Length: 246
Image 1 (cartoon, helix red, strand yellow):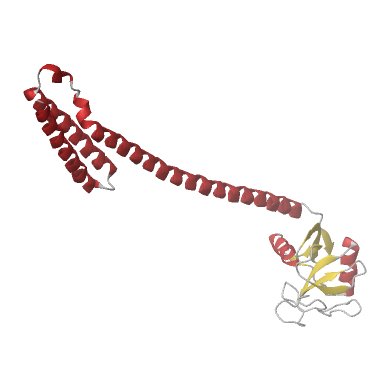
Image 2 (tube, rainbow, N blue to C red):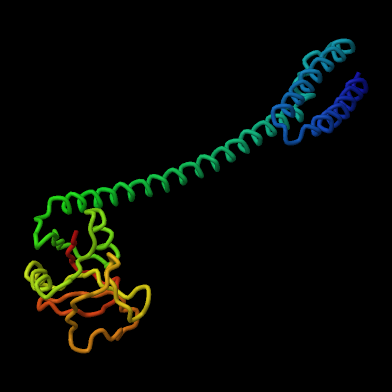
């Protein structure tokens, strides 16, 4: 009887080894591989019970059917656990990427909202500024200190440009409004030494500071007006208040 049981176990071991080989063809297809292993496990237990019941009697009746397929069960459980872990890790990586992506998008959205809020405040301030009049022109003084480019952009929203001067009367009128240092529309951004206003008009009346324009620090392509009404070339990204004209 011991010999018979030994033969049965040898048969089952060979059967189990063949089972793993057959199911390995599904590598990469987790559901199919697990399904194959479960089917082989069921068949293993069924065959063992039938064979053992045919030859077993007496003290061998208590031999557990589970003992023959312990290796297969353990490997099946291990395989299932590994597949589950693998799937969990893949989903975790994807979820982490999604979270990182949405956090980045949320950050950009918050920056945009903040910038839009600042822009709206500037626009409201622009539209509610006191308007000064001279002849047929309108002027507004903006105290916010910004670059020349930002100032010109702001004036364009008011349907105007940075201030230009066509006479001594206008020059005096402007300096009395601001009484500080402001951006004017005068610049030589396109051609060094060839000054024009941002409304594309040529200067008709200009009072430069002593020694100006000198392009002293290089790239001094934009022009400011001081409280005395005199002009000076300076780096365009300096921050100054400004006057718009339309």
